[in-house]
Amino acid sequence: MRRSLRMLAVLTFLTGGLAPALIALTPGVASAGACGSAVVAGTSCTMTGTLGVTGSTLTLTSPSSLTWAETLNGLDQSVVDTNAGDQQYTVNDATGTGAGWKVTMSATTFTNGSHTLLNTGTLSTNGSVSSISATTAPTATCSATCTLPTNPGLTYPVAITTADTSPTPSTIYDTAAASGLGQVVIGGSTASDPIGWWLQIPASVYSGSYTSTVTLEVISGP
Figure 1: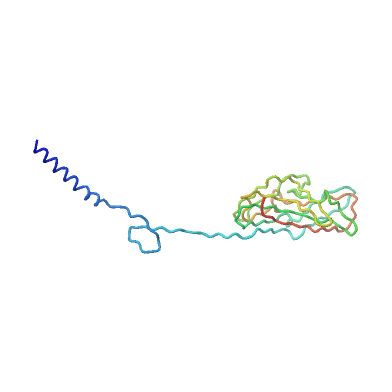
Figure 2: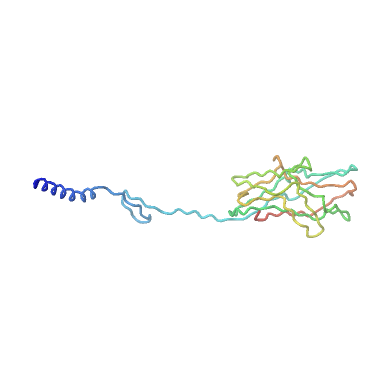
């Protein structure tokens, strides 16, 4: 019995003495430190990578003019601008805010000397050069990489009421927030749905050249 107790005491002593040695012999994993100073081989370091992005501007590139032509035939007529270069405008949203944007249009009364066209029901845009009754929005495409715009809550055709002075702008294209980022082409001569600038000309119109000051503007926000 005494012999057994001595052996147990020896084993307990040996076990207690070996444990610290075993822990000390177990290799540890070095924690990563901050980069910028020397670190020993086998030890990693971490750093922060930062990209600074500066927002730029919201711009609109539009046709320089709009042109219509009509030959009188004794009937009311609907006339569309058929010039290929007039069938698109480009909005470049480089702001980086995702606020969205809208394009507005206003126009003064179409005037030929003492003769004028009606302020209401004369000018409209509808996304088509083949039918004045079309109800589609102009096609939107990316020049490079963009977030295509969504055009909510806008019904085509959009009528633009003209006025002698201070005509009221009408929204002709509208985007939701978080859409339309980058360079976006609206319409296009080969697009399925171009801009479609239309005039309604009454049979009683006087011949001659009618002019109007047309204003387009891009505005931040949906």
